Amino acid sequence: QVQLVESGGGSVQAGGSLRLSCTASGSTFSRIAMGWFRQALGKEREFAAGISRSGSHTNYGDSVKGRFAISRDNAKNTVYLQMNSLKPEDTAVYYCAGDRSVYGGVRAVDYEYWGQGTQVTVSS
Image (cartoon, rainbow, N blue to C red; front, side):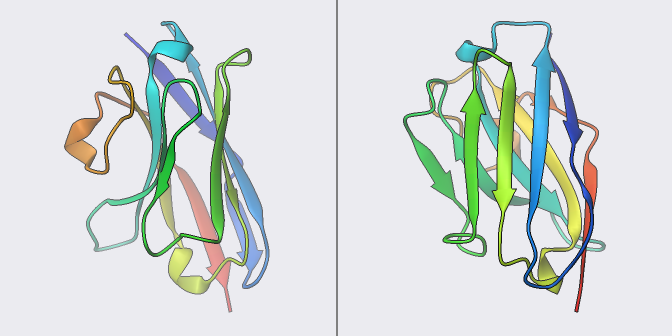
């Protein structure tokens, strides 16, 4: 079993930046592909970014490509999401997720483990 805890959410003005962190416990972190998803009020959960077990492969949802960056530190059991040039439409609850595959996926059903979520609010 893997436990995931997100942190770093908050409120920011449009154009600003935030960095989310997600720390894992309960399993070997380097054997878990990680992803970040987000869910705005009244909308479906949306893939934001994913990273392979080693960190050598990353992928991004179209809406965040070029503005967000995912990274991981396997020594610290932590995955990060650096969010730059934030827009009001980035407002959502952000969830980290983990899966025992090598590369992870882009669908929520691809992931076995989930954090509780952290709110990000971007004002105009």
